[in-house]
Length: 235
Image 1 (tube, rainbow, N blue to C red):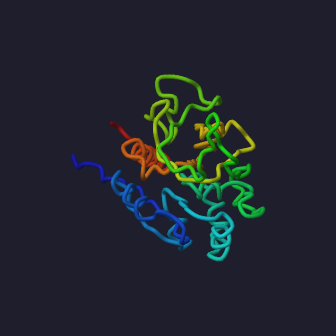
Image 2 (cartoon, rainbow, N blue to C red):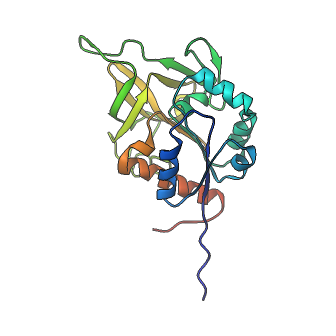
Image 3 (cartoon, rainbow, N blue to C red):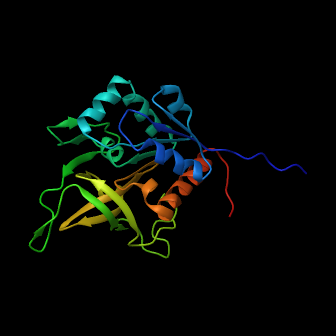
């Protein structure tokens, strides 16, 4: 009996000039995805997983997405049921608005705002902004506790208090707290470090720079994409 052909997951990393594209692509390839880095609508629309990365200023990023005519494309992906992943600035772009260097409208895929760290402190010490460090993630109050607190989410298999790598000056505040998967602290400020609403997952940390835990997230995205293609997985 012939073996069933291997089903590949195709990922498109959205290239709009702001992001750690190479490392994200390498992480996707490491877990078995076929990867395209592109700003072309056709590549984005046909992908099984769409990853919106980003490092830089919110307003500049939104202006570039508009110039490339990708705003409605990304909104369509969010409605289509395919995994749409925001990373760092990409997470912030999913929100309704940001206060970075003035008020800017975002993609509006997740209702909420983007706020700056304002004098984060530990005791009498004011911490530097941006946060550039490994930091822990913790279960949101909206996530049921258990042996695997994030089972059936892209964080599945990660432990409570897992360390992941952050580089950011701003953080997201979703309007609906039930979309928050994990929270983290920087000084006295607790913030949303990852969120999920149906097929949309976003994280403020960088999975591609977070070692084995980050690669586990990419493996979970493969499983999610195979699920949307009607293909089961076995381990």
